[in-house]
Image (tube, rainbow, N blue to C red; front, side):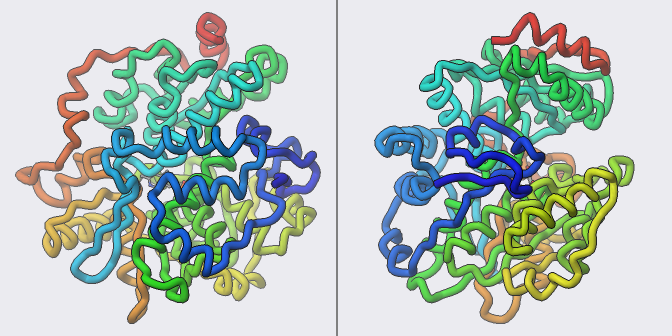
Amino acid sequence: MKYISTRGQSPHMSFCEVLLSGLAEDGGLYVPETYPAISTAQLDNWRQLTYPELAFEIMRLFIDDILEGDLRHLINKTYTAEVFANAEITPIRQLKDGLYILGLSNGPTLAFKDIAMQFLGNAFEYVLAKKGQVLNILGATSGDTGSAAEYAMRGKKGISVFMLSPEGKMSAFQRAQMFSLQDENIINIAIKGMFDDCQDIVKTIQADAKFKEEYSIGTVNSINWARIMAQTVYYFKAYLTITETSNQRISFTVPSGNFGDICAGHIARQMGLPIDRLIVATNENDVLDEFFSTGIYRPRASHEVAVTSSPSMDIAKASNLERFVFDLLERDATEIGALWSKVNAGKGFDLSRSLPAMRAMGFTSGKSTHRNRLETIRSVYDSDQDMIDTHTADGVFVARQQRQKNEIMVCLETALPAKFEQTMHEALGDHVKIPRPARWENIEQAPQRVEVLPNNADAVKMLMRERLL
Ligand SMILES: *Cc1c(COP(=O)(O)O)cnc(C)c1O
């Protein structure tokens, strides 16, 4: 299996090379040269598999430069009942109205990003040891990505993490989750500024080719192919759990931001998983809903991004969309290059002519508001005594609106309510206790470790020089 860039101007690479690199040299994203095809007979053979067994069968189709025994070991070490607090890893439950909820948020940081990131941590450690290399991960976070990365990389040999976050802007729980880590290789840096400032510092340092080379600086953002690949597994798992035969079709609604999660669903569908529809759910930051309803992609300026109660979906542009549009345009790398040079110039593009093709690929979309979220959280609690978080509520709201008669619909649960207590109380009242997994009780009281720095790339570089591997 070789990987190619969506812009067609970069050398082909193997899985392990793609794993450690971010963007392709030409600015594109890596995708497999072809998607492996899964027959219905093969799907039926997989029905009895456990999550790690299924993950192995799927990932081996995309990875041919890790020995099979080693890959199996990496997967078995990742997907355990201890790490994901559940033997099924991604358990499914059904609400009284028939909607299924796919539980993806039982990992260490209570959001779905753990599923891919935990694998990434183990895969990084393995590949770096083989190559005799080290990696210093530099990132910026407003919450979920940073903590998922830190909990995946903590204590790993050959890896350190420098994570920038805006001082005082994350929730108390999110701060406690990250800053209470005492591992030597995790360095939390609070910047006196906003999230965008943190991102700008990362970009400035990334652009310093000499510094980057000298210190092997890498990233773990959502454009990493291995993350998308690891996420395809739970679409298969959900399908095999719900259906009895492989001629049934099911649909998914996915709370979306950077388009990573639902891109994995698209790839599962391209591989032959009988998915009927893939519904993109956004919050007020509706750049994706606009694209899938009009064909016009209009990335927002950062000042146009609203701060919402589903903050992990507050995005100005959706980086992984490029992978989908590459397939939509029948893998025309030249056109992708032309479209994204418009995006890089701060403009958008119009693919309204491709709307029929988008529908044929299963895609539709919807959006929700703060009020929709609160009402959905309340209504699910009233009918099922079940608590869903604000992001999952975006999905459930859109799924309920769009679900057709007899359509089997699965909504992805992308975080647990414990992460967003304040909005949960706003929806359910102060008297309702928001459940917290035992390991997070009193986390706010644990000692915290964080370096506070001015909004300045040189200050960050200076600290990095002291602590780099
Ligand atoms: C990251 C995140 C999302 C958005 O996922 P994408 O892959 O960026 O589309 C949704 N919900 C939660 C809780 C997240 O952390």
